[in-house]
Length: 74
Image (cartoon, rainbow, N blue to C red; front, top):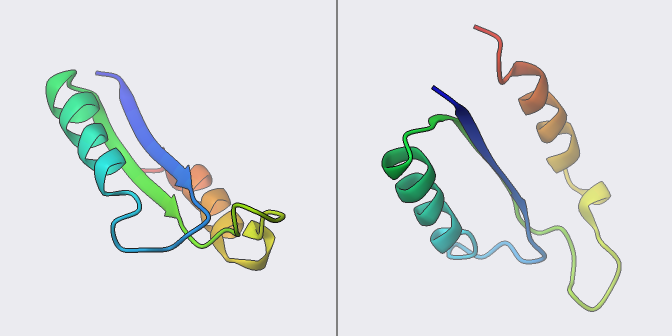
């Protein structure tokens, strides 16, 4: 079985920002194709679409690093 993980960033942090992407990931990749879900990291609030990215001002990079290190630890 192959593994899959969903990692996404976005400028905004609204409750519906990732709704369609997560739905597609879960239905298509996990349920239809049959990959094993290793988790999701959804990093919202990373800046404004008219300016410079603001991800360095969030905890998302640390979370992504931690997620990457632990994804295959059992």
